[in-house]
Length: 362
Image (cartoon, rainbow, N blue to C red; front, side, top):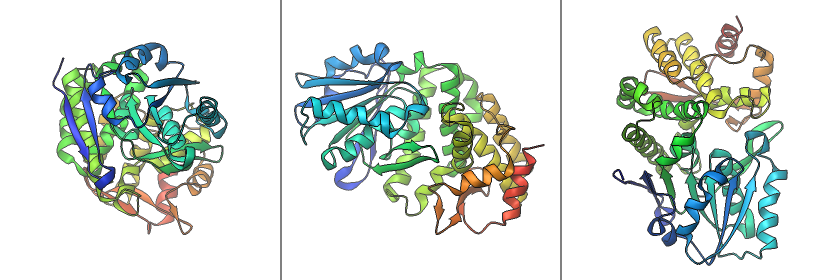
C-alpha cells in the first residue's frame, strides 16, 4: 500500500479531511468517525456499484445500511432521478441524524450532496469519489445540484461533506475517455494560479495518462490543495472562487447545447479552456507561445481543443447567457493573463467574445 496523503479543507467548524491513496475503500477508521447517526444511505450508479460496493460496505460497521443505485450518465442528473433518493430515505424512515454517502463520480456526488442538503433541511454527507474528475474537483468544496434542460447545475445548494476519501485504486477501472475528462480539471488548477504545477504536468503527462499511481496521487493532492485554498477563502463564491470556473462557461454551453452526456464535462471544459486561452490571446493578455502550451497539454491529455462545429456563434451566446456566472445581467468570464494567472472579467469587449467564437467556426 502506498503512502496515504491527508489534506484539510479549512472551513472553521465545517472543516473536513481529504484522504488520498490506494486501498482506502472500506477502511473503517476512515469512514466510521464521520458517520452521523446509525443510518447510512449509499448512493451509487449502475456502473460503479458492481465494481466497488462490496469493498465499501464492511467499512460502515453495524449501521442500518441501505442503497440507491442510479442510472449512469449526465443525462440522468435531473430532479426526477433525484427523487429516487428522497423516496428511498422516506421508505426506510431515515431520520435527521442519518448520513448519505456518495460512491461514484461527479454526477453521483452532486446529486447525493443535494439530497443531503435538502432532506429534512440538511443531513450528514460523505464523498467517496471514484473518477479522477470527482477526486480532484467535484467532491471537494461543497457544490451540489442537478441540471435543468435550460442550464447546467442551475438547481443546487452549498453543502460540505464531512470527509472525502479518494482511493486511487478506483482509477484502474476508469475508461480512457473518463481519465482524460478528469485531467481537464487537473490542468485547470495549473492554469488558474499554479504555473509550477502546470510545468510539472507538462513534464509528467505521459506517465499520468499511463496511470502511474504515484504521479496520480501527487496530481490529486496538488489539485485538491489548490482548490481547498480557494474554497477556504471564498466558500460561497462571492469572489475568487469563481476562478475555478475557468473554461466552464464555454464548457457548460457545449454540454447544454449538445445535450447532456454527449460530451463529458471534462471534455467540454477542455475545449472551454482552449477557447478562454484564445480569447485571452485576442485581448493581448496571453502570448501565442503560452496559448500553444495550453493546446499541447490538452491534446496530450486526450482532450478536445475545439468546440463542436454544429454550435453556432449565436447559439453559444444564448446558452452562455443562461449561466450561474451571469451577475446583474452581465456575463463574467475567467480568462488568462498568463499561465497560472487567471482573472475574472466582466468588462470585456463583446466583439472579442464573438470573434473568439467565430474563430472556432472556421
